[in-house]
Image (cartoon, rainbow, N blue to C red; front, side, top):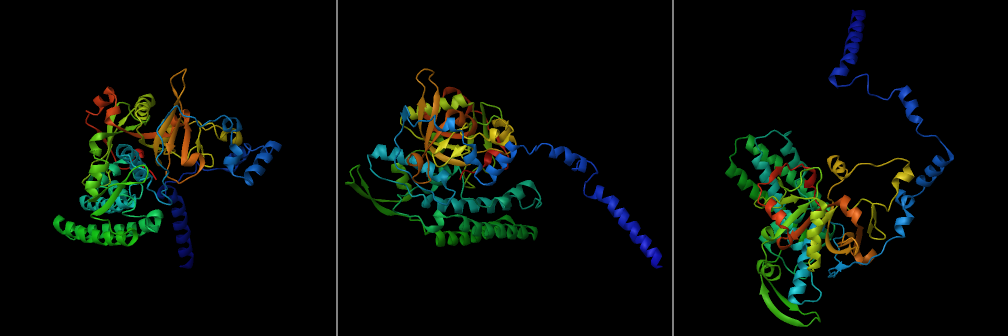
Length: 471
């Protein structure tokens, strides 16, 4: 009997071992064999040069070793067309660059039109409403998809992205248009607004818990009105958490406008909406156009991305996909008219933060690593190697007098003071490779782009690479 049991065990073990190939999709080919490993090892020759590079990299920052000194020494900060900066802001340890950038565009216009001196819109005020609206966007999305399985791609996407402090110009349009704005001194920053990660994590945990509860209610036969009522109660919990972290937004306030010399001009009672009407005063959805350079898709087409909004009752932001020369033409027209723009890019690539420089020739990684990095912009987008990651305010361009072409650009950043007084300078070549979005006023849009805006937009899914929030 024991012998038969042992034979049976050996048979079962052998069967499972053989079956593991089909059970787990594994095969005997495709792995690294000893012979293959010997061949792979030949790439490292252990030459004096290889050893010297290894010793250098092992004890130093790769970026410091890869600096191209020729590029470093061939750079100036003169700009032939420049809109004067109105003061550097600091988003600190938060992902609110999109909010700072958008408000900085409107701040510059308000200061010029009203003849004001130092002035800032409150960033924490619209951020409060942004977080509440995003919570509602998530919970309503859960209600809308309640009959889909948990492994449905849209359901998975919702639970992966319940809340974010990042965003883009869509949020400027959605939130400011509904809730208005206030001056910075009317609602001031808190530790949680300057350091958003912990608050965002706690609210995200709660939202995911709420999402599961709504799905359980739907599975138990609860109808949509009951789910909507429960959602309102859930949002009450989120509202309280936001107030505890950020304070309660004002509904009205008294504020004194001052001139450039700091002298009082006018004291009035405002609501956030009346302040918006007086100091911004335009329909943000209708007055601004988002331009995109995405070579992985057809140019001169209108696109929108599902759930690319900050309010459930907002509008998915649409963008016109264009070649770079078209975008530059409108950017230069805006700067010539002393108008800054919301601008976003992949800021982490070829960036020397100490000098505030973005230059594709600044780091020579190929020489250091002894290989090439050959993907173009289209391929980087397709492989998720590059995408829009940070928003800033485009404020200057330098034009070559001989060719009439741009040679470099400058943005007002929101990381506080630093190199170039808190501004970043990018070469035109870097602009070509890592610029993604630019938002311009409609009056600077070309006739060709106006025709594209008449198209019915192609809707892309929420998980499209171009959805990426800016931080």
